[in-house]
Image (cartoon, rainbow, N blue to C red):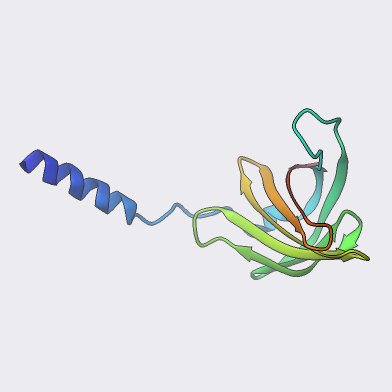
Length: 124
């Protein structure tokens, strides 16, 4: 019983551990080659995410040639996470991504076109 309680206490404490510090958000600045293929077996289809500047918890740039708006950065959970909005004539596109191992892994919710897509990007 004592061993069980010790293991349970260790698991509980590790669940409350503070995550490691995230990289500086400035690592986002630059041009990212974004793979937008709709399925893993589809031919490659690339566009660019350009992050021109990072200021505090926000950034400026373009995605797929459209200016980003409402760009936000969160580093509170040990990783750089971003969210932003672009738009075209069909409506807004809500994007989010996490930087993992030098690669952005993201999602796009196209509300006017009724789809959710996965994308990944590497810095050029």
